[in-house]
Length: 353
Image (cartoon, rainbow, N blue to C red):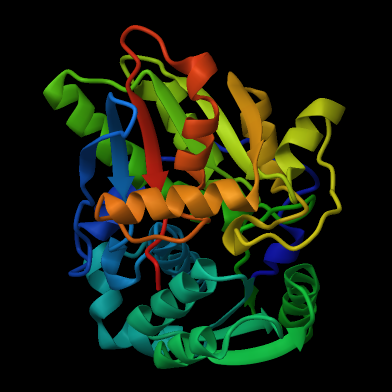
């Protein structure tokens, strides 16, 4: 089996092909484009919301990345064995299902990434082993088990579970499918990020058809995969360029700190209620891309994220503080950002479950 733990000697530039996940997802019965909502804000003005709370019946944007990455890695292993390229319709064949049964995907999860990997493995006939910190709720463990995943409570914190998953994959010669990246490990997380480009393409088509483009985009970030993938697509092919702000918890501003120091940097801080974003070390792929883009950074508090989630609930969009972080950033930046033609866009990245 390919050892993806040694796939690069350093940072590889993120150069996705958004047609690949789009092509695969067209053959997936669970795929449906998510809506862009237009909501009036309490202070006046329209807010654009890309609502990912029902994405592919998994309730979060990460379904795109994890499911797509599992499929691509199965295809890469198959091509290495047979010399043949898989087409989307091939994944349903008995031959490929039998091949996938011998593959196991391993990852750590603070939430939605583990669900996406588990779902992808189940859909394509492979196996999944998900490492959770002991602080994660039992209900989430049960949701993973409902996706046929083997769940291991391997550590006290998310960072420790990442290390445990890495060691697990090495020891058992299985496929590590993390959403973060580091020197020597970039191929699987680049596939996860490539899956996220579907979100930006869905939005671009809508804005182009309506001839209505956002002026400002507020993107929440943990390790930075979603923020970097959306930023890449905006800067690559959106006809009207918005101002982009990366929003992080003030307990885990790893991308902001990295940008200030000019290199990937691990930060310390307390546990945040934005659990999906409470990442102390950035993805090097995400950091490298954001450094080559024109973006701003800001932080928000747990209280600001809670208030934003409550405001979205009032608008009929049920989410968590992590899912509402973009709105919290938009509200916090309002006094300095608001201007003629101000039309903000946020991504509500997950549902309330």
